[in-house]
Each structure stands twice: as structure tokens, then as C-alpha cells.
Length: 76
Image (cartoon, rainbow, N blue to C red):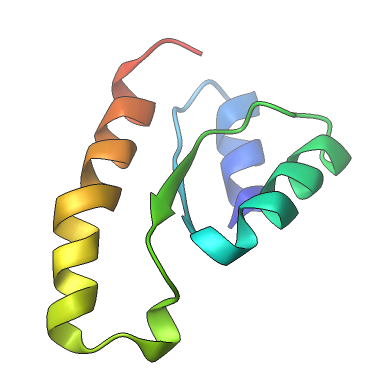
């Protein structure tokens, strides 16, 4: 998803990539590799593959959603 965000950002469209906390370092390194070290990411606590539907919903609505909104509303 970082590649899609990079294309959007280059076109002037704000973006926000959802990233599980275990992959934040990889997202940062990938952003640098794409030539856009400040690509906005929104944290998804834990890992989606091991969360129940209830946990995932709570993490998306309680944490990730605010990160996405912040990324989309602030200037680049």
C-alpha cells in the first residue's frame, strides 16, 4: 500500500497507509526506498491476523481511524 500512497501523494492526493505495529520499521524503510521518507502511516495496534473481529474493530475505530483522519487533514 505504500506504493499506492506514494503515487497518490506525488499527484497531490493525501494518503494514509494502515500499518500493523510490527511493520512500522519496514514501512519507514520502504518509504525511504520510494524516495518519500515522510509517507503518512496510521498505526493498527497488534497484528490483524491474530485479532478477533471484536479486537480488530476496537483497534481500527479506537486507534487507526484517528491516525487516518490526522494524516488526511494535515498539509503535507
